[in-house]
Length: 279
Ligand SMILES: C[S@@+](CC[C@H](N)C(=O)[O-])C[C@H]1O[C@@H](n2cnc3c(N)ncnc32)[C@H](O)[C@@H]1O
Image (cartoon, rainbow, N blue to C red):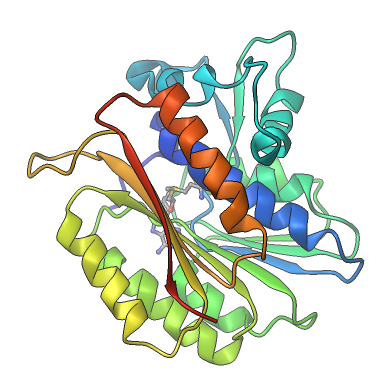
């Protein structure tokens, strides 16, 4: 039984990093006229109401996007992401937070297509409704890991794949990397973004080792931790593995990461950015 609901976490510090990276990757894809395919293996509901019960219960967005949205010193590397969040909210009041499908929709042109997978019986309905007027989107209530493999390589040979599992099951850690390794065999030039929470450091180290032992090339690992690693339960940090990142993404992250630490973090917070596998 699936119990994870992203509505509790929408707009938190982990979403900020994930969606800032997604925004910059998709903005890069639209610099060329040729269409691209976006695949979201774990899509969630699409759009989140921050004023409603779920987000209010945890208040996680207050420690994330709410601390950035009205800043007047946003660095250029974050401008596109912040402008996107602002476009859904009026008069400096934060009510809506776009999930990854909503971010992707903003960058989708007539020549682009999107495939969105979601299993949860409630969130699939929200997602379907959200995508109703997005003509080149295809929403499916089925397993996103298999979904990715069934769609590659995309006809356009240009593609971005976001893998953003809930990690309710420990197997998600290895399964997500295995899926990218298999996907890469079918489509080695695609950009793959894999999100992860830092809860148990050993599990992240294993993912990293899995990548290093594979044939996958050109992998960037970025991490932003609010607190030091601990054995206690709970997410202390967040990270992403990005396969085939756009050439300027690392430079953008070098600016984004210290800014996020300064605005969202504390003296305990840290960040890292490393090309773990060269091209
Ligand atoms: C972290 S949330 C996704 C958030 C979304 N990507 C965003 O950035 O707004 C993970 C979602 O994956 C869904 N899910 C879990 N297992 C899945 C699977 N095997 N295939 C597709 N969706 C799955 C969950 O129901 C949940 O809504």
